[in-house]
Length: 177
Image 1 (cartoon, rainbow, N blue to C red):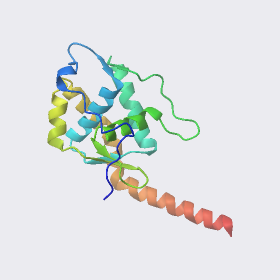
Image 2: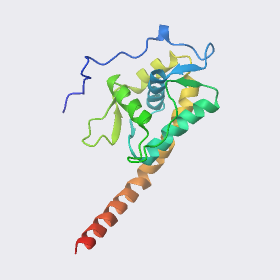
Image 3: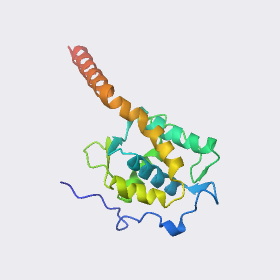
Image 4: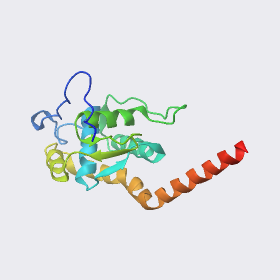
């Protein structure tokens, strides 16, 4: 089992202590790191033990989460305009969220291709930390919307991906003949 990645600057940074968190009733503003952390905690608190950490479904879910925050009058400071990278098709802020969650030791991206995020924090601990934010219910609703597409793709998406890979492989072989 490979050791968890440590940032070059030292040990993982601690999650924002409850005493410094702003409750939802006093402010609708949240720093992007708090937003990322709370979303990850909410996904875990809702019962997911992992989620797809790549691909259009993941990036669409992230964009929807940020748009939902804006629509609900919640300003996420530090997140400017977001678009998919035209070359790679990724949303850089979503990747930033994954890296910060890994630094905070909420998730692990230990698989070779970084395709799936596994939670390192227990569901009970995530629920406890999320409850301390004063924004638990809103983030849980957001988390349920975030994970719904990836969980519904687990059963059918895997077969679809395997079929697409097989078709692509056959096409590639046929092209070289």
